[in-house]
Length: 369
Image (cartoon, rainbow, N blue to C red; front, side):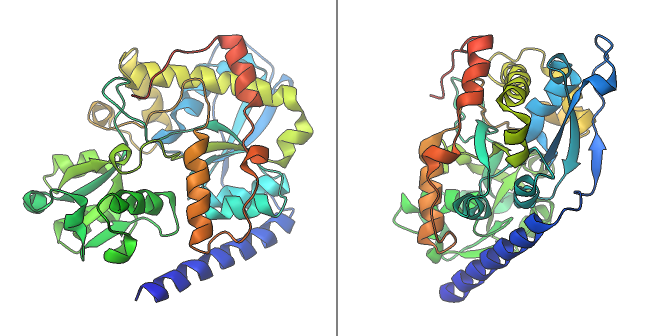
């Protein structure tokens, strides 16, 4: 059964790579584009702003981008965002390589590594969410392994998942790596469970009917399921795989053509937004209501009362990517046959833009412990 599963995942990765090559050769624009309104700060002619085309999923992990745009940080740098909403991070890889998008955000994937190995001009330039929540920094993960509430007493260690059915949004993904690494701590692997792929919203129904025994769920569905008595949060992502990069910002080929100075200006605004996010949802709880209102206006989580119940992933307010887990994930993809040739991470993780932002803003003292 597992051999069949592996073959399916490999085939899907090869199909995705082929689709990426076709898309990268296209010159048509990316659909569904909308321009986010800028904050009403000092008047600036639209023709004076440099437009940055960015592809994101538009969830709460994109908080810093929405904050920076709403509060005028991009406008202060002479930039405006033209936002394209995508279903997953895989959807931005080909348009970034083809110059149809300038910046992309989302989870690290095998498709991203494969494109980099083919020589597509893509750079990982900043953190956009990692599993490093702790009581000290005040963050608690937005990704949680949950179980049905009536069965909560049955689960004490990850060894109790042996032979069980666990829901994942996708296979060959960062969340699968996270679960597999957690299982390793009790001498198990993903081969000892059955994986059922379900969209995050559909996991609540599956948990309520016991169609699955557990699920790797995300916010706001964790908070909603808990409020409805459907599920109980069991293990947070940082307890399964501490430090894993859940999401990153990626610069595409066109950012190289625009020049490093434009990238520096983008990053300065982004890191400014990161620090507002960090202050709001970390240990300081500064200006939380105002930040929640910005996110409610820009994401699908419209109920502002949920923001006090949800978990939020730690994002380094200095913007730096946690490189060691990226290397671990790359090895996992390669060992599972999803990446045939590994790119040189020293060449594709580019801290120079974040370095410049930190020089200008000063280093923000942080801890992930």
